[in-house]
Image 1 (cartoon, rainbow, N blue to C red):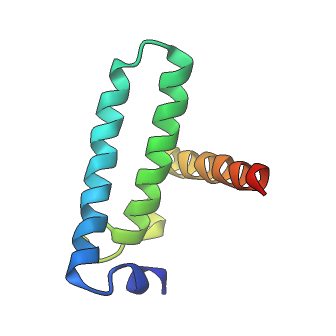
Image 2: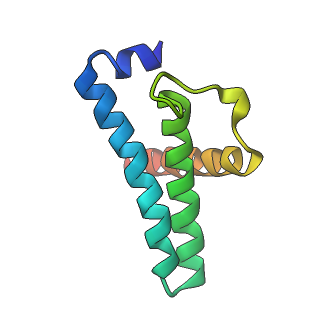
Image 3: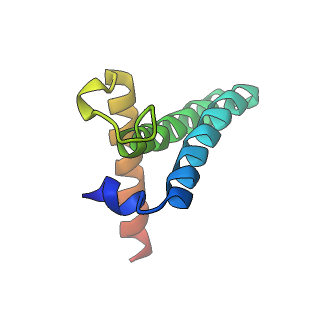
Length: 92
């Protein structure tokens, strides 16, 4: 499983949890961006990345339940995955 691979030891588990908390900080920082379009796309990307980490790590750090994801978080995750896939496709 992806979760088991990502949290194979306590250091990697802590690093994933810290990354999840930093994405929450990033969402708060995005409120300061003046351009509405930039703020919107930045928040969608940050929320999508945060949702991916939430599924991987979960709220308690033991793994998340994908059935408990809110529809806005799911939409942000799908949008972020689409943007990442387009970026990889462009780089190839």
